[in-house]
Length: 365
Picture 1 (tube, rainbow, N blue to C red):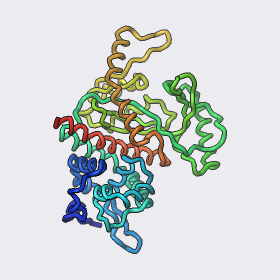
Picture 2: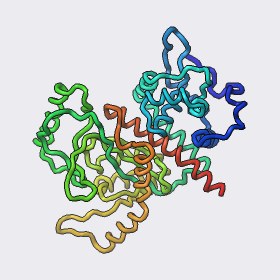
Picture 3: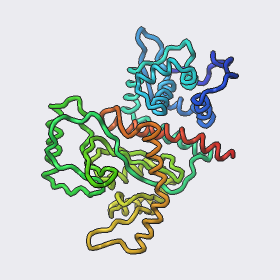
Picture 4: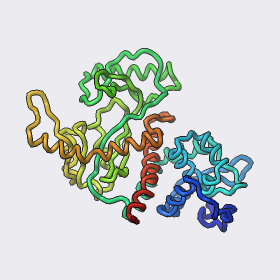
């Protein structure tokens, strides 16, 4: 099915109202449209997303409308239902999505099916690379050190019942025996029958509370990201929460362009001989913090190295802070590893776009 170009519309119904004072949302959307050329992304979506007909055979919604509505849902922390309602009521939302006042707005079920289709075809990752490429071409994404870190994404869809297995703990290598690992898998297999509506890809995990005095149990996923020196996100990888940070580095680095990972910086959770070899094979210089062991404490030189690294890696922590504060991304509404992972990628796209107008202002200034 071929679409008329999303960008080929004549003067919009809204054009006569250009003289009205713009809201903060309108100004933000205008800045985004100045920074990003949507045509290549539109062409990619049209070529890879093949929607069916709407009810009664009407023409399907253009995928660019649906994708921009997804961005709005992340920027404003909205559910699909809320996104549908607010797009119906907001002139600035409609304008950004390319809808006229008299156009019908895609409903929440359409948005959900669109997300599922993009997830099934793994289309979010290429779109993220296309957005980042445009930002780099405009000088907004300067190449430098790739900084890695991980954060929990909590799932409200935990299985009910008593936890009868040993869980992985934060900052500790997985010391569970094969029997204990098997017990956990048997627990989740049993819960698939008892709790069919739970998320059976997510896992339990023990993490230190803010005061570091006690362990608290969480259920969900672990989001690995790598950022550049400015905190813009280069790559995303998602794993169940019970897997140790060091296990996700290889897959994460494969999603980052080679020229953007000449140096890789991270905390000691990523330190392992396997990861040192991996980075060497990739041609990346390792700036992973050194780890001390029993009867083998860190030398003064290694402590100094760790201190220098800690002065720079705060950028990735700032990025996680922005994701949580702006978008509420520490909790997911979705079930399943694939859906949560691609939602993480969409949130990364939304985060980079939200930060970009600020970089433009600094460059102009």
